[in-house]
Length: 222
Picture 1 (cartoon, rainbow, N blue to C red):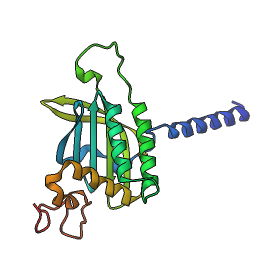
Picture 2 (picture 1 turned 30 degrees about the vertical axis):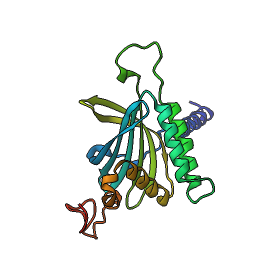
Picture 3 (picture 1 turned 180 degrees about the vertical axis):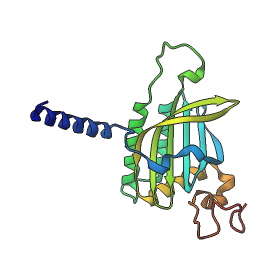
């Protein structure tokens, strides 16, 4: 092999590696996506026009806390439009956090386009016509991010399970934005647990002796 050919092959390999890294989902989400030990603290159905569209979950993922919106619906575009409306109410243009919100909404649009649309002529159960999308707001002691994923899901006796997920995009956004959105989303779905949410959503502090990783909530909470 000539020196010139070897150089060309090396440059080609480098270009392919760069292109692969640029593909959606190629960036590793690291510990924030290590869901093998996920523990669901609370869950609630997501319902609106058209019935049930998925679940909202508060998840403990090791030392990470996650607000997980699991959508599994034939009306994905409509449900995302409702999410966009609420997001713009919470983060009006020009307000602190609005730039991060716009980045999140743009990524949400891209993620929806990345989820395949079943062919109209397909026959089969209604489940086969549903489109899954997983939105995760996650915060640990050192990281805060929003992750958009295409999950592999199954449903039995009305309970939706996640068998795995393909990362579409990870957004490393300001911690204040991620944490406030986690609380706003959780408060909408878990009104009865409102007083407990601060404790549930905070990553455990190993030196504090109190927190989601402990056996009991602080005094005065359930």
